[in-house]
Length: 315
Image (cartoon, rainbow, N blue to C red; front, side, top):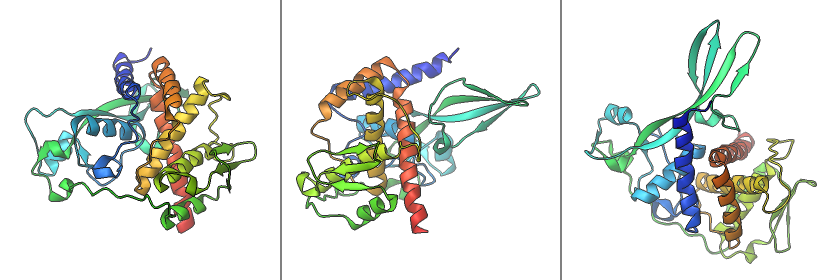
């Protein structure tokens, strides 16, 4: 039996995203922080991951928060902060493993970055001596704009929007792409990942309206590229446009492009063909309240994989 409270939380988050999509808004593509889409940050300068990134982006948009930092009531108190009267917290999630051995249970909280790709509540893994029961729980955080008397660094003003519309290559982004060692063929008028031959097909940059649109599209295809059996071996099935599993893989790639863009400091432009994709995503999200959680976790895994390739190359 699934925990009813957890089921309600899945539904609440998914319904928020459905509402945004029905209004033709992709909540993971927004000009946060004065035009630069930045990752929500913990009090210790570590970014949130996966579904929590999406949740906090949506919360910031709805409530007009312009600061990147979020923290729990306890963390705010330890830093000398006071949460203003009447402020309401935002619910986010962590996963963990409950270890059972010889009739005793020990709860071990796992970091969000180590979440399994398929999030399932009450999934039990048994060994000869132990059982491991995965769970997901929520906790509550406040944006620093809701908190007084924190150290000044947490109240950093929004950066001015950075624009990059000259259609010139970014040396830093080109270096990031090169370090993946993905095969990229240029030409034609469509962007896609050819899994059978394991290469990405991209139009020339000059065909895009902005350089940000070009790089966001390439990051979308690089996310697809990570699914290969020799990389993350992500197989969601689905071969035709309109299939739920096809839509899921496209949603993973969309979120992956948003996460990578955020990590590298650019704001992804909205694709002109996004309307039919939104219709398919809505169908998936309405039929499965856990789909966005799974898609966000898979997208974060792809993002981390690409970032780690760069870290390994730069060592």
